[in-house]
Image (cartoon, rainbow, N blue to C red; front, side):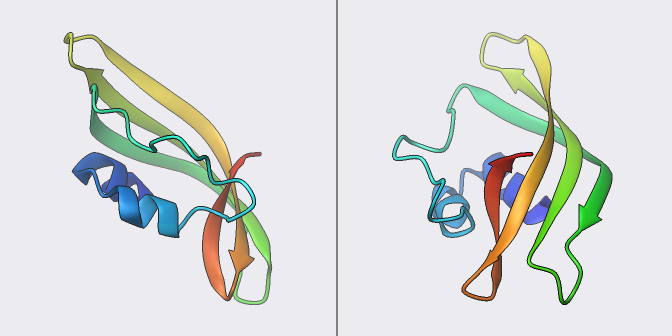
Length: 92
């Protein structure tokens, strides 16, 4: 989760695509150029252990828009193992 947040914050669209589950990856651009990400707070998780195939991460991510307004994204994200790697599936 932290690595994906860092990819959003630094504009690394390739990393985001590579860590998105192939069954749910959108065709549209993954980044919103009008947002600057300003903080991540992980507030919980389930599963995701060494022998598990799925898990969730609950977080709040803060951002600032190009017009100066601020906001936050709260999500409970679902992750699954695909080809031995953790991939983002979507909101739980």
